[in-house]
Length: 348
Image (cartoon, rainbow, N blue to C red; front, side):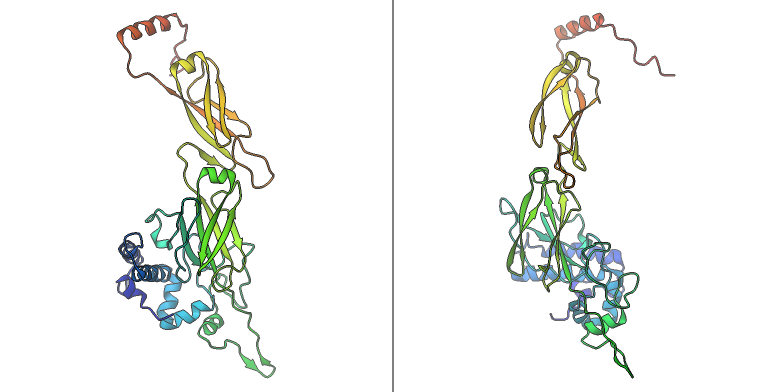
């Protein structure tokens, strides 16, 4: 990989603040985004912008880049990624390319931490070190600092130099460098969370099929051992899109059910959609707005322990907005016959 001046790529001076770098990245990402540009040149420019932001937006990595300059590439290839463990952001090299996705030819895009919220994507692919606290993460090498950053030996090894010291008893042995891992975010909808789904990922020209299990939620991580470029692990992190009807609480779901004045006052059987299909909910006469009914076992599958969660249905009363004079007179007669105490008598 040829040396790139990351500051020149983003068009900022070396003294630029983090806010200036973020602003410049967003502008450059929009300018070179493959959705609005065609050809290999645009894709290369977009990758270069992402790579530059991945380094300059991380203070620790930026400091290392400022000190090592062109030797940053050799250091990065060694896999000793500075600041590894930051969730949801890019901390390594650039993306590998575009690939096909799930049903309907869904594609995925690349994004770094600085572009959060800029692109509405189905797949955000970015490279990172092993996530801190992940039990699957592989070893951290001798002499590593508590922050998880590289030691001086790591830096020397990344530059192709030996970090071992020799003495009377011979040279010291250095632990092998950790292989760089990769991370992709897979966005799914509620139906896919209920039934499970699959995704296709293109990694350096090789298509991998990933099975996302039923019950997967935002934050669910699927590891493909040794499938990342360079031989590290590829992690697919699930993110569930917001649903227009249901709010998810683990395996349970919450939703509102609009009912008419007649249904709430006199009672009715009202159809309710759930991920498992429609059911008829019995609304008792005199049901108050805000009352919640539980549909047992109609929620999402539980990934651990088996079974399904519940659906909690909250009643929302919809009053008529247009009444004829005749209807108003009839309603007045009805309500005059109803013996309803004043609900405000308890107010002070």
